[in-house]
Length: 300
Image (cartoon, rainbow, N blue to C red; front, side, top):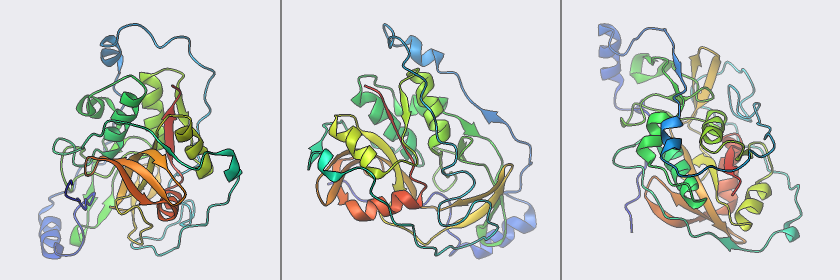
């Protein structure tokens, strides 16, 4: 059994107060506010594939409202900073449960984000998704090609983050360096996936969770955003970005949902490399809601 890793996206405040004060005094960690957004081409990747993906499907509408500059329950554009203890909202059923099979499980080869990508859960989950639909890609290659927000991080006392990038623009921080990266959200990941497989990306963000289960029941896994504990968290911080305040948790995570039953979900977890890891379904859904109901998949 793989050892469980409890990854934090950046250095925790506790235990580094003195180090943070020294860094602030010396100017270490305070960079330029100059900003460059990268959206690398994936043409080189596509040339490696034989044939084409066929005619493009009808345009897929994307959700741009969840999450925007914050998370549900925190309020759009809120200026509160630090730890947030707002409980996540309750999911509302929209699709009759009887229309779905009682259980489903897809056989998808697992991938571990370690050791190359300690902050690369999103792109490693994407690599598993692409493999599942017959278009395998290296997680490292995808990490080099994904959208990146190069906004420099500015820290305050105790290593608190004052200014950084926006995960709705691209990956924030360093995907290859532990404690030096945050992540990337569904918007830029959806666009990235749609460049790799034109017209086939599907953004399920904002949908009821049963929409995710419906895709899994039909044999297509779904990448979804959650926490590393698969449960809601009270650990939230706020920093400023060029677009406004960003509310984030160092326990942000993304996995590939490959199955479900009446009480559990089964996920390929890039943090541990586990295949079809069982997790509590109700708790996972609450954490998924807290992270903005983010999910993407691809038309087979």
